[in-house]
Length: 187
Image (cartoon, rainbow, N blue to C red; front, side, top):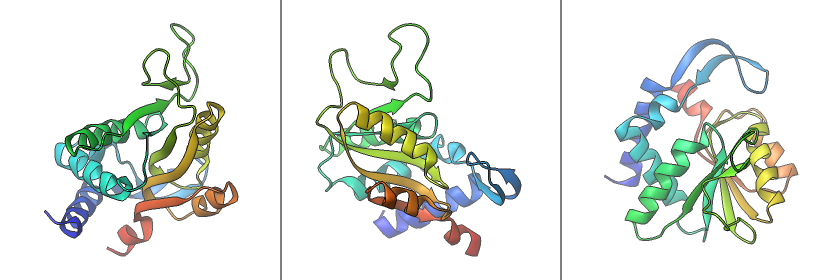
């Protein structure tokens, strides 16, 4: 399937499985009359594959070492991308950032790295399912930067177009999205 055909098919899956109308309160605390819940798309076999393929295509030339982000939205995305990147012969490892370190075991804030490995000096992209103001992704950025990693990009599947561009711009971070909310609102 061509990239444009994949993008159109994924758009339909997101529209059908993950986009809705009705008043909701967003993670940012804002009220909205539409929402995206990408979990049904990220956990659908076709949706997960298309998200991974389109994300891989968007990132393959960025010379990345790792992809990850804040739990829970980034976990299925990062895992699917790690798998497809291996299949395509250009592996990009995955990790995720806990909202709060576990209070038992290794008490890690960043999960997915083998014992003794860190993100220090690594080129990292922070991924997110849906971005409103960018606050959630910035939590992941801060945690990853504390390890000494270089955050080279924030990539979201859907940008709600409600301030994230400004948030990341102020932090000196490039920001890209696969889709914009306006595309779904017009459809």
